[in-house]
Amino acid sequence: MTPPYYKALMTYAPQPVPHWRLTLRKAWSIRFIALFAIAQGMEAIWPSLADSLEPHLYNGLAFVLAVLAFLSVFVKQDGFPYFSRKGVPQ
Image (cartoon, rainbow, N blue to C red; front, side, top):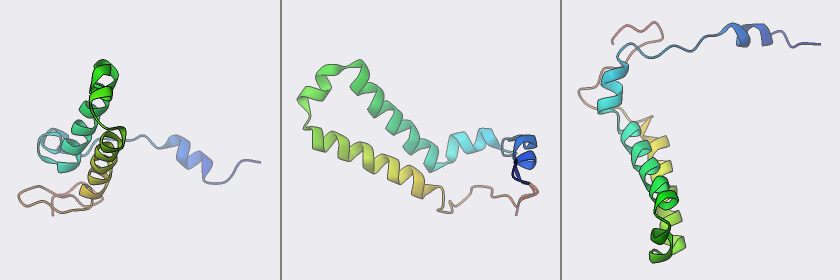
């Protein structure tokens, strides 16, 4: 038997926020995610980096960047538009 909310979940189509370009340029969470991706990519592309850094230090840096990216989503930034559920600037 299918749960009653299953049909609603399957018909939901995710949509970008109204000012997604501005969000990509100014949101701190995007910046931290980019730094995290660069740090992870450097390890994969440049294997000697893994040998030159202490593994605990490198993993700690990756962890801190991931946590900062998650937490920065909840921090209000000055000069950045925030939207209600209807997409109207507040």
